[in-house]
Length: 152
Ligand SMILES: Nc1ncnc2c1ncn2[C@@H]1O[C@H](COP(=O)(O)OP(=O)(O)O)[C@@H](O)[C@H]1O
Ligand SMILES: [Mg+2]
Image (cartoon, rainbow, N blue to C red; front, side, top):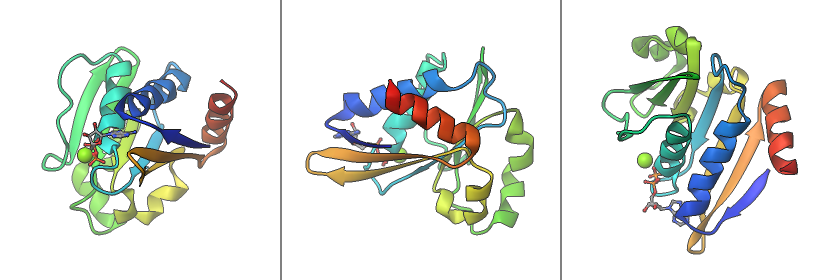
């Protein structure tokens, strides 16, 4: 699904729409979030986490690697792989134990093997004064979610 996001509010709306399409139980879902600096990754992540019911700030996980949010629908883990250089290093952040929640992963290209186990990939790019977004389903349930979003 390709979208033009004219301004920040459109990026926020996309974050909300994705969250609302997820099943009640968020466990085991993974979304890969890519795009260069300033593309809107944090804006999208913040909107999705707020739509999940979190009210406070959403700090960048750049230094902590993982920022967890315990929400009524399940946990959301905001993960930053910038400092990771291979799949093997994923165990340093306890990747396997994070499967009880929704994993929202920035800099997923650091661990290309994640493509095979992720459900969704969102790529953001600059386009004029706005952004171009491409949301792809990587698993069957991810594809179904994107199809449902396209129809809505
Ligand atoms: N669709 C959009 N069009 C224009 N500006 C946007 C859009 N989405 C987000 N922004 C703005 O881009 C800037 C960078 O966003 P941010 O989410 O911090 O990017 P990233 O985390 O990818 O570095 C922010 O000022 C944000 O308000
Ligand atoms: Mg950011």
